[in-house]
Length: 127
Image (cartoon, rainbow, N blue to C red; front, top):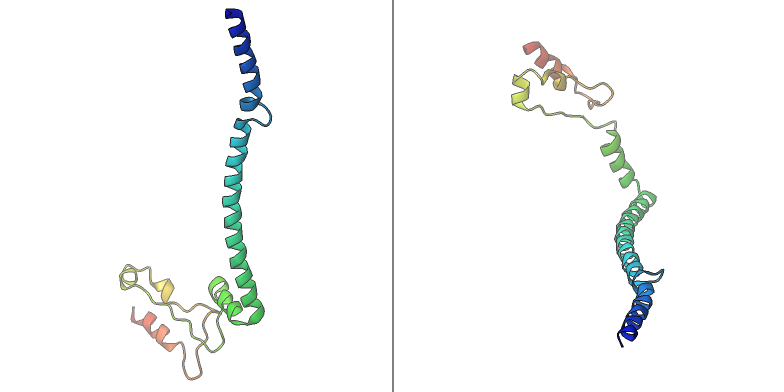
């Protein structure tokens, strides 16, 4: 009787081995399921990114507003009738770091008709 019990127990272990540790066993299923969840999260992020890019492409195709906005923020461009004004923090100006910030930036600012750069020069002369 003892031999029959050991033989049945050995058969049970042999049958369970492929179920748990084999090629299509539970361990492999759990691993593939974890990979699937990870890939689904990555796909969701990519779908959101694609939606944002589609909106940007649509804006660029339909009008010049988006192009102008990108040129302003990414490249620092401005129109010929605009004036570039840079405000200096009084604390940094008192420390002496504001002198370079107060100087006009060549090629960045154009004054409208009737205005000149005289106020900037007089501010430098007052120091």
